[in-house]
Length: 98
Image (tube, rainbow, N blue to C red; front, side, top):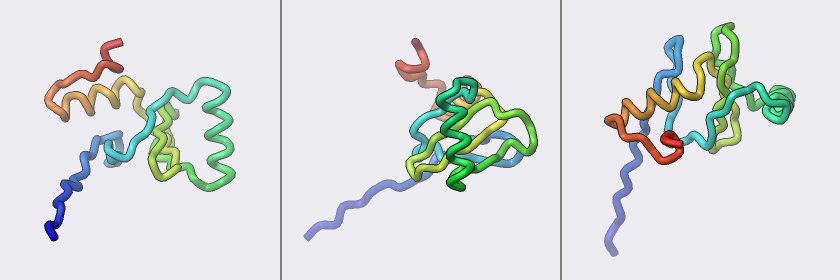
């Protein structure tokens, strides 16, 4: 019986202050300004699923992960998308082009 080899490499993107996010584990990157997102963040704090990596700065993006955690970062979603794009050789996805 042949074994299947799977490539399990993790792409990391720098999100500031020496912190990195595993790109392949991200479901969504959103701005925290809307009331529904703010409610999700408040509820996440209550549940203990928030990872605050802002180093005391203002939260500019909330990153939702596959594991159910929400990371709060101090750079904008656009800046994160740009870093991922440049890391992947400048390829722009359809979502970024819209």
